[in-house]
Length: 305
Length: 222
Image 1 (cartoon, rainbow over the protein chains, first blue to last red):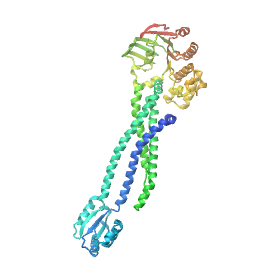
Image 2: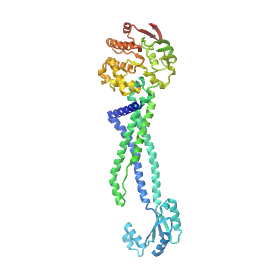
Image 3: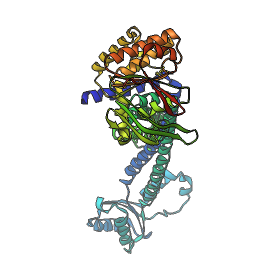
């Protein structure tokens, strides 16, 4: 009995597939519409995922830049650094001397000639402070900065994390927008599949009526349409997956060049196995749901009992 | 086998199609149903197949009051009735075999058993050699025989036929009626709506005549 049930399902699925293949143009257009609706949010999620990784990589180097009072010399700075080293929140301190600071500034700013005009070095000694992992969150870091600023030797402390916090906030906001977009486009998939199934039911109206007359159960009549919806969804999901991967493949080169300019080894990632499964499962689920809605509405109109 | 008790069917626009109709069809009986078009023949058959429900009165099939059957019992009820239509109602995109097998597939029967039974039914109507053909490649008489094979494939105790020879010439009609006779001989109950009076007269079975929704003549032999 179970074997028999399974073979009927397999039959219905195969027949549905054969039917889709027989009208390739209509199938292709529906599948393309579904694929685009799925590929858009999927691409957005891939972009966000990459940005998040990129942000995470930068954040690991995040810390504090403590600018000492201008009149403070290197010897006093080293002394201070040794003192501060004892704090549990601080992992490492690099003291950047005035000369080092000037050299770096000359390299990065390109204002070499202008700097040569200066009679004396205007830069203070700077301490680059790398906080311990437990102190890297926004709040303890701010507290650490405040306590450092309270020291008389310190002019001011700058949080290097401010921009990563803004960056993270933007990512979070964009993720929420992407979710909304995904929901809206998911609804579009439902409508596309629903409309396709409605047309299919219309085309097979005679068949539906005859099946009803010879005593087919509603479940039996529904089955091929539900399979059709699921299959449309699956094909749309597969095409969407190909689209996203193609995009990221095409962008791999440019991103690599950009990363090498910034001397990082950042590489673009695409949909991983988990994301792929979510995409395909979601596509099948929305296809089935879309056809379920259409079937419920239109079959009862053809066969009113 | 089939019992109508004071059955009235009223359509909102057309008025009463059947008016207080009562009759009974015994198991194994072969009965003709005649009357001009619009006399209520199709309505009567539709009530038996539960394509419609009566406005008043009671219809009993095989001892079961149809009013007691809810929507979800309808498929099983229809599988116990073989229905034949004037316009065949075959599925044009499916082979003759698939058309005949449809009621068995819908009933969830095992594939091997389906093949055996569908071929037996096709053999009974003499169309086994066409099992792979599409219905539209067959003649009208052959298509009707496919319809008949589909009606009997589930071995229902009752067969209903609505103008089965309406589109056929006399020779083909006679052939179809001989087929019905054969089913009658193996104990199937048949109710056949037709206005082929000549053929009815030549076969000598009980005949019910409807006129404007009432039973006006019953050549009953019971």
